[in-house]
Length: 249
Image (cartoon, rainbow, N blue to C red):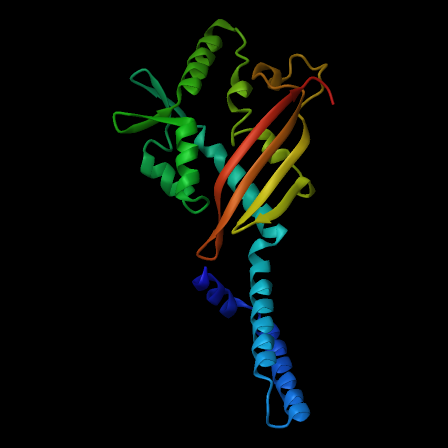
């Protein structure tokens, strides 16, 4: 933590530094005038502490600002789309042709997440089989049934049920900037979605594309995304998504 504070001290705006150090010099001069040569040492130390604290808070504001946190949130959510796509089938299992190994997924997510968050994502959506990452059982069953439905014209409506409580929930991309609530808790910065209503389609549209995938007309999302600072950047450290399906809003 000390190293981080020192780093932020040097990253602070030079104009702000000049203002506060000039203020400090003026304060020192006033004490000299008032007290002669007997400078009040405690008051001087306290003044230096206030200046340093203000600079640190100012520097941290650039990282913890809602604009940066919200931007990072959308960057993470959009990146998730690529983890479920480019479906390939081999030896009875479905997998993502773009990300066939643990290292490929890790390399893709590491600029956005901590090791803990990466492990959580991989454990939710993938399994290891003979050194290769394949989709988890729920996705395997869905894709197998979906392929069968393509030939039999039967409708497969289970997809949304698989991803509704995950970071793949498409409703997360529909959350508006002003609907994200940002707060700090210790060394973490949290982006929260608190009962945000998501509208996919009108419930009268029974043959809508979304209905074939099991989407509800409306959903209510609750979510929490915990970010931490590492090397001057914000990384996702933990997340939780809860869907409360609705028939109407």
